[in-house]
Amino acid sequence: MNENWGDGTRAVHAGLPAPHPGAPLLPGPVFAAPYHLAGYPPGGPDGTADAYARNSNPTLGRYEEALGQLERGDAVVFASGMAAVSAVLLDTLVPGDVLVLPSDGYYVTRVLAREVLGARGVEVREVPTTGPYSAELLAGARLVLLETPANPGLDVCDLAAVIPAARAAGALVGVDNTTATPLGQRPLDFGADFSISSDTKAMTGHGDLLLGHVAVTDPALLERLRAWRTRTGGLPGPFETWLAHRSLGTVDLRLTRQAANALALADLLADRREVTDLRYPGRPGDPAHATASRQMRRFGGVLSFTLPSAEAVDRFVAASALMVSATSFGGLHTTVDRRAQWGGDVVPAGFVRLSAGCEDTVDLLADLATALDALGPTPR
Ligand SMILES: Cc1ncc(COP(=O)(O)O)c(C=O)c1O
Image (cartoon, rainbow, N blue to C red):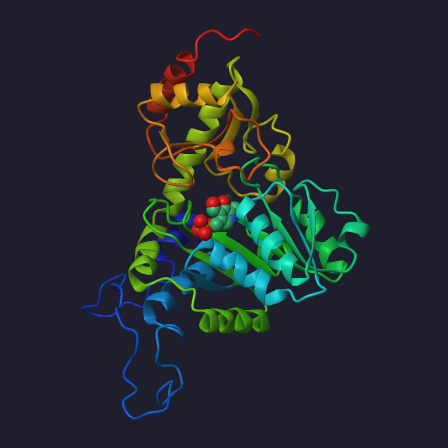
């Protein structure tokens, strides 16, 4: 793929096969578990033929090619974001190893680290996304997992500072890049060993599938991840994989609209007295804006803020015609998630993670104002 092409061009053309008369531009999903061996050993006469879908298959191969082109590395696709995260954690860490991970990132990753790895003798050290990543914290670490912007608090980790420090301490570094996507930020360019993503979110963006991937540049890590997936079997079926590839063509358009909507909504929220602790890294004045501007190529559609109570969030959602209550983020539809209801994040009862969708900005702004007005007067 031409490195000079813009994001939109790259996304539309990522992973497409060479033109062939009579063939579709993006071939459909291939539904098969075994493939003909036709009397040859697995791999066929030249060693590249698909033999069994858990090892490799054409639908997966094309989507992985596409992701590799966007990440500027090699991608391995998994059945969900957590299958991708757990592949990196479980394949890398053995008893006695040290894992450093964010105390404010996606809470299921923390639960996995504490309850599965911790129980198996891995030392788990938690640190806020903004650090400090002290020499003491990094000492003896085998894997440092970062997440930026962190879900749901949206703090930003300074990749250019932290990745070299962690590598100098002898650790492998993984970045959960779900909220940013590879169009927003490329962890491999900063020297990360693993760029990890839940493609359930903005990468596919229609809220209709679960998917994840890990991208790497080191061929040895690539082989390990592929072997891990073949042995544990956590890969998506061809229909989800193909849907994801089809959706990828619009990722640049979707992210552009989502980011414009998020900034407009954040500007409105900033002026409202019902709202506290507004966070959007793309907004000048946000505590993460300077770091985010250095390392992010675009800011995505997720923002967060706090309303006075859980009950206020319920009234806010009930008064809205466009913002639906749903967990997950990065989709076409604007969604609101009161995170405290899940019990995993240390956030106030009225904390809201809002994912701006692809609706018209003017409609969303009017809807947001209506929803906030429904909360009634709030004393300063
Ligand atoms: C930052 C982050 N990483 C990983 C995941 C897990 O992804 P999935 O739900 O696709 O397993 C999520 C899901 O919300 C997430 O927000």
